[in-house]
Structures are given as structure tokens and as C-alpha cells.
Image (cartoon, rainbow over all chains, first blue to last red; front, side, top):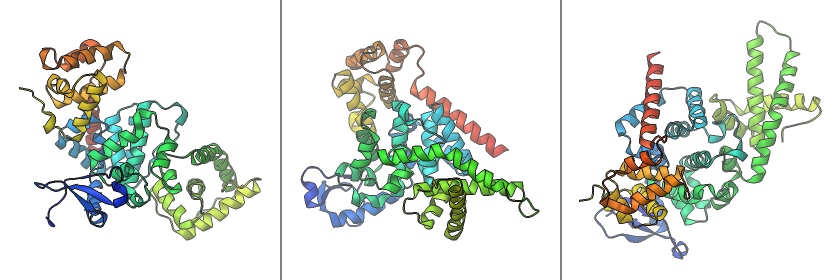
Amino acid sequence: MQGSTPTAVAPLRGDAAQHETILVYFPDEVPAWKETDELRRWQAPAIATVTNTTYAAFAAFAPALHVTPPEILSEIVRRLASLDRESVIRRYRAAYSEEKWSVAYLMAGELIARGIPPCFWHEALALDSLTVRQKEALTLADLAWLRRRHPDHVSAVRYQRGKALLTGNEAVFGREAAFLFYQGQRPAWKIVGTLSMTLPQQWESAYLRSTPVRREAEVTATLSARVRQALHDDLQTIRRTSTFNENDANESLSRRHALWHCSRMVKSGSPTEIAMRYEQMTGNPITRQTVAKQLEKVRSVLQRKGRDFME
Amino acid sequence: MPKVKFSELDLTGKRAVLWLADEAETLTQYIVTAASHVGEIFESVCFMKDFPKGNAAHTTLANRLRLGGTSTESILDCIRSAAPAYRPLGERTEAELDELLADLQSVAFH
């Protein structure tokens, strides 16, 4: 028995949660309740499997993927891996706007595998006028990100269905995601509360955000153009030389604007966290020292303009 | 002899059958016998989500599902007759994936 692998792990139900036991199915054995200590040992391989089955998880919402020949899917996935991040994001945006959900889910799987959070997949989202299918796609992407990138969050989730979403196999994930989504009738903030999502996790999501985070993101989007203009005006005052030409100025502008954007997402103001966000956003690594230095310049520019938009 | 067996479906397929039975207000047995392929079950789910309850197309498919295996009309034919302009899920996805694959192949070629 020790060497065998459970094929499915059912979530706890009713008062079973208090006893910290779980129903486990071993191949060719009668299902049995096991203690949580053993569960932790079993969770690790379950999470490891999840990392390779992002596409399978999406199949629950795009049933056609479920019956698509695996060789076609694997060929697409293989070719997707050779694309650069901008190409994948561009294709995702096109598929999302044209409502080609099978393609959108495949692109989403690739973006999640590359560690790009859903908040950076869209240029702008009209959250108040989403269709049910769009909400479904956004919710699923956020949940798939949470499952893939934050498996440790399971200890913070209060409800067994939420735990199953993070630790179960892809079919369980599909079932629990559908339950949470409830055909678009459950608001995003309620799902956020149900899963006890932290602030950084909400910032990483495109749709699953509480009202304060959502409002904050809307303010950032509104200020974005004005801040960019202020940074642009400041860079125009710097004399161009052979070591700092127009291209360098544009690069600086993009970098400072992106850092300002990321700093708005990190409420602690930690340069390390901002550097991590920046890398997720642009794909370019940056040191925390550079982040601190650049943000100081951004702050002084914005203060000169009359307001500090850093917090 | 039914071509689809409930016990042989995976969790996603079983959930789809249960959802359809609820939507068509019938028993899962009728849904399973009405389908000649698991793809038809997914097609029905997608169709019923696109044409929710109260729509004539929804009623047509629900009536067909209630007949189970006693009708000679396939589910796909029923979908086509209920909404002639509707592109079935399988057809749509195949076209989308073909287009994507061609796109990716052209990228690799360049």
C-alpha cells in the first residue's frame, strides 16, 4: 500500500473537517479515510501533477479540448513553448476578444506556465460589461494561476471545496471552479472571500479582486496616462548625448512607468517585491537596488508635478 | 446497445450528463442513450448554455434528449435543425485549432 498512488482524493465533507481526515482511493483497494498527516504527504505529488496539467484543467471549461486528439494539442503546446512572451500575450488577447475560447485557454495555460500572472494579460478590461463567457474565462484563469503558483495557500482556505480546488486533480478543479463560478451568478469579491485570497494574490488576478483592490486598480489605470506624460516631460529636459540618446530615453520612460505601475500593486513598497512584479510584467529581471533608485526619481518627478501618485 | 456508458465517462463527462438531465428535466439514462458519442454530450451542454431555458432551440434539444435512444435523429442533426446558423462546438474548435496550428507553423517557418 505504501508504494501505491491514490488515483483520486475526495474533499472533506461535513464534520469530517474537524477530524482532519480525508477519503482516499487507492487502485484496487476499498476507499478509506486517512489522517491529515498522511494527506500532506499525498498533497505534494498531487500539486506536482497539477503543474503539468494546466491544459487539462482548462478542458473542463472548454469541453472540445477534452475530445481533441492529444497529438494535436501536444503539437500546439510544443510550438507555443518556442514563442516569445509578447507573441503569446498578443495571441491570448486576440483569442479573448474574438471569443475563441479553446485558443484562449491554451494561451492562458502557456502564460501561467511561464509565470506571467493574469493581471498582465490584458491591456484594459471593461469589468462592468463582461459577458458570462468572458467572466468564466477570467475566473478560470485566475483560479488556475492560484492553483499553480500558490499551492501553499491551501492552508489558508477555510472551506473544503476551496481546498479541493487547489489540491485535487484537474477534474476536481473543473468541478470546484464551476461550483465557485455558479454560472456567473457569484460575484468576484465573494469568490475572493471564499478562497481567503491575500492582497498580492488579488493583484495578480485579472478578475478575482475585492472591491478596494478593484477600485485601486481602476485609479491606477486612470492615472497611468498622466504619470507617463509627467515622466516623459521630465526625460525631455535631459540633454541627449552619445551615451543617452532618444532610444535610451524611451527605454527609461517605459521602465519608470512600469515600475510606477508595479509600485502601485505592492502596498508594502518593498523593492524586492516590486522587482518581482516588474519581471512578471515585462519579462526583464531588475535588481532591487535599481528599483529603489528609479522609484526615487519617479517620486521626485511626480512630487514636482504637485502630487505623489506612489501610494 | 448504448454507445456511451455512464460508468465509462470521466468526471467531466458525468457532470455534463447530470447537468443535461437537469436541464432537459429527464433521467441521465435518456441522456446517455440519446448520445452516440461523448462529443455529442459536450455539444449539447454548449448548445444549451448558448440557448438558455425559454428559448425555442433549447426546447427542441431538450425534447430530443428526452426521447433517449428511441429517436433516429442524432443530437448533432437536432442542433442543426434547431439553429441552422449555429456552428457546433466541435466544428468551431477544430477550425480555431487548425488556424492556430497554421499560425504557429508559419511563425516557425519564418
